[in-house]
Structures are given as C-alpha cells and as structure tokens.
Length: 296
Image (cartoon, rainbow, N blue to C red; front, top):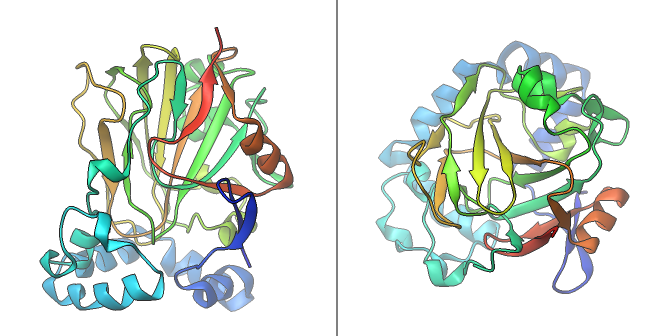
C-alpha cells in the first residue's frame, strides 16, 4: 500500500495504483524480476506499447480507466468522446482556470500535478532515492561540472502516476537552454520499483536542461522516462523568454518523474513538504500550487 499526504486535509490517503498487482509481481518476485531485466526494462517493450496507445483501438480503454481511477474529466479541454487514442487522452490538456498560476515572483510553484518529495542541503553523492538507497547527481546527468553547481542545494522530485495530468511546466519566468538526452532503461518509477532498483533514476532514459530563472537562479530540470513511456516530448523553444507556468513538455503513456535542482540559498521549501519527505511520504500537489518561497 502506498500512502500519500493530502496537504489540504492534513491527512494520509492510499494511492490508487494502476497495475498494482503487476508491479508488485515484476519487482517483488524472482520470476518477475528476471522478466523485468530480460524484457520489460527494454526500449522495445515500451515502444511497442506506446505504438498501441497511439491507435484508435486504444481509445476504448479511456472510459473504464477514468471511472476506475476517479479522473475528473470536467477540467479537460476535450470531452471524453473527443480523444482519438489513449495517448491523446493521456497527454490531455486542462482548462487553465482549474490550474491557476501564482505569479508572485517570490513564490515557488509545483511544475505539475503529482506526488512531491523535497530534500535540502543535499549531498551530491548521496541523494535520497528511498530510505537506504541513494544516487549521485553526476551519474544522473553525466556532467560533473554542472552537478558541482548544486552542492548543498535543494531538490524536488515530482512523481507523475499514470492517472495524473502528464504535462510539466516552468516554475518561473526566464530563459531555458536546449535539452540533453541520455539513453537508458525503462523501469517503473513507482515506489514499488524505487525500493528494489538501486540508482533507478540513473538507469532510466532521461533528459536534462538548465533553466535560467529570473527569480530562483539557474534551475536544473530533469525528466525521467519509465515503463511504457513512449516518449518525453519537449514543447518549449530553447533560448527564448518564457513565462511562469508555460508548458515545458509532456510524457506519453506511463508513470514518469520530473526532478528539479536548485542552488544553495535560493529557495525554502514549505515546512509540511520537508517534514513529510523526512518521514518518507510524498505530498499530493497540483500545477501552480505554492511549494516554497524565494530566499531574499
């Protein structure tokens, strides 16, 4: 059972996990682990499933999926019968009025919908994946020079479950750089997998870029692919001015993760998020929601 913290109601709730039994089997049993390493983590498996999710036939899954996981379709720009495939639904856009952006320049917002962890004063060689498992930023981005800039800084990890809105956004105005691509595997980013695969984020396909933020210094943006994620698609234009809340990109089908690194003494994450992160619980957040403030 995966528990997440509801910031609004100050309570914990059980996460409805798509394919829960399947995940527990492939990452928890000897046979399942062997199949994962032989087939499921491979690019071909996710690519083939991604191709299916682009077909019209896959759209027949949408209605049952939304009902099973209580997905609110009243906030989407398209009506449920207007989606042409499951990926069309999965990459759905929302009506902006349901995700208002806090434009106070001193307020740090969530880059998307999902479950959030945060860590401050990070050790670049021992960033927490889960209790007992760590990874290094240098391994994550394969760039030691850039990694050193974030010594003693803060990182936030936003996990997007398959049921979430799967577009990610800029947390401030500024100028983004081009994206760097790193090939890798396609492990799930669900906590079930994070507890069993060492350095999972460093194993998976990923992209990273530097965002020259107007108010929070240079932010390192990292997007992590996962099982059945057909693509990480960047929709922004590099080296041009963007506004706070503008879309940066989106994931095709599958759970995915966005990680942001901030330099030392730039931001202060909200106390409830830091406290829950220490306890090992993710906080449910939405795009545009306040998650921290600028350090003056």
